Image 1: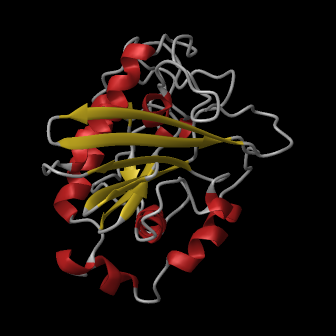
Image 2: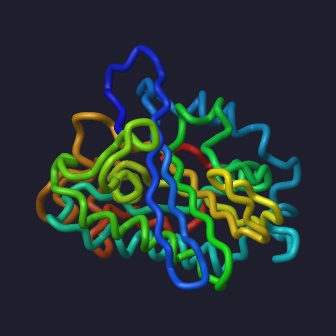
Length: 268
C-alpha cells in the first residue's frame, strides 16, 4: 500500500504474501498507511513515550529471557537490512544507513505480545511503517522473514510498482511488493523489532500453536503513492546534508555511528 503525499484522510491499506514450505507455513505481512507528512518528530515521540521505562539502562540490560528480542537477533536483523539496502538495483543515490531504535523496538514488543495477526496499534499506524512475519513448525531465524520481504523485488519495477499489487487484502490479485519497498525506502532510517511466541494465534481463521511472531516498526514511514522508494544514481551522491558526505557500503552514513543503536533519540 502506498501513501499519497497530500492525503487529507488516513486510509489503511494492508498487503500480504504467503509461502508454504514443507512442514511450516511462513507468512509475511506488511502495513503501509496513508499519512500526513510530519514536520518534526514531536508527534511520534509523544506516542512512543508510553513505551519508555524510567530506568533506560535497566531496560537495555535485561536478560534474553525477559527481552522480546536478543541482541544477537537485533544485529542479524539490522545488519541484513543495511546489507540489502546497500545492494539495491538500480543503485540508490540517497539510501540512508539504518540504526536500531529502542522506542520502536518497545512499541513492536507491545504489539507482538497481543498476538493479533493485524497491524497496530491503530494510533501509531500513521506515524510508522510496519512489516509482520509469522511461522510455525520448523525453527526459522528472523532473517528468514527479512529476506522474504526483500525477495518481493522480483515483482517490482523501479521507480514505481507496476506488477505488484498494493491493495491487499481488500482487492488482492497477483503478487505484492510493499514489504520490499518499505525495507528499501531510503529515508526510513530507524528500525525496531520484537519477537514473541504466541501459543494460540489466529492467522486468517487458522489457530497456530506456538507461532513465532515478528514485528518490525520503521520510522519515518515509507510507501508513499507516486514516489519511488529511493533516488537512482551513484551511491551516496544525493545524501542529505546532515550526513556531511559520509558514506559506507553504498549507504549515507554518519561517522558518529560507532554503534547501531540510537536509544531514545528520535531525531537525526
